[in-house]
Image 1 (tube, rainbow, N blue to C red):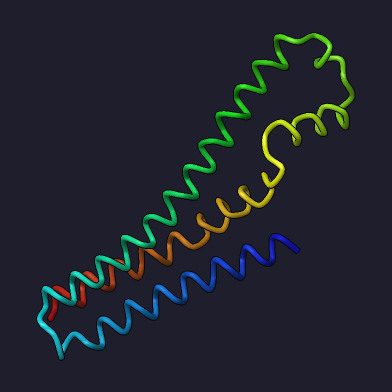
Image 2 (cartoon, rainbow, N blue to C red):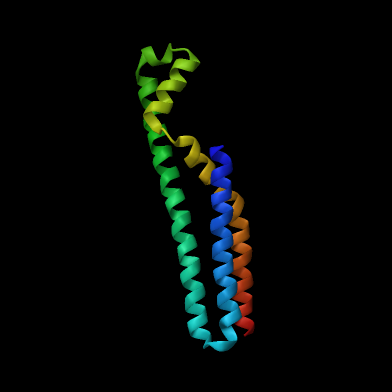
Length: 129
């Protein structure tokens, strides 16, 4: 259920940003090139900020996972635990919503090629005009 919500949210965000970029391109003939380029740049910056937020969450998750791995190696009682017990401790220690963050990262990786294509199309259109 969370996976579907995250996926829908990601699609919605990409659709909104794509529409804003398309609107800017449509208005291109009505406005100077620099103003249109600036507005496109603003939208792309918003997308970049969203992506950076995802990356920071994933980096934080990685750091916590790494620190936990070291704790497990140093603690012999943790090493002797059953898989289910250890998994429960890991889920508590790292993130309560770690699954959602992982899914956000996966969704970002799925969407990234579309963002690259959109960006290159915009660059070509701006250069041509």
